[in-house]
Length: 114
Length: 114
Image (tube, rainbow over all chains, first blue to last red; front, side, top):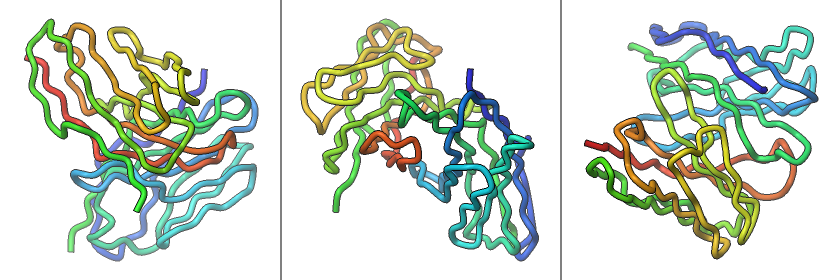
């Protein structure tokens, strides 16, 4: 079945550091890929998405590129801020009749210090 | 503004009791989902619905049930609560049948079974 693997956390960075959170997936067909973010005490919210190979999703300075050849969707940000401290989830959305059902990675806790 | 709300936000119950968690959305979305969030597992799908009177089992459905009598609500019932069901529960909704459709999440319900 479908699965998503994220890099082990937690990740601790200083403000303005470069961020990479690795995400790889296993899926049949051609899924959509998502990054969701969960701030403390809140539900998940969509950060960015990509729907086909070589698509780049971007939002709030974060970027991720859908790499079919390496089955990856790594999240990057050039300069993190304290306000980026949160839990980040990579997720896969299958196509066909399974629309809307997301498969999540285990989540990566990011802490950014001033 | 349209939203998705869960209640209660926190619940402590005893082993063997029946518990119902509420989820209400005002977006008029057809698709609704229940996930549980556990450390090291990310979010896992419990049940989902694609419309009124439609319900389907997810990855971890044993011990849970849902019903969909209207568009707005998808209550999750734990038939006989077990300690293994201590978790944070998230409800989500989305619209349409596209695999890249964004899901909107509630703030979560933290359930403790003692």
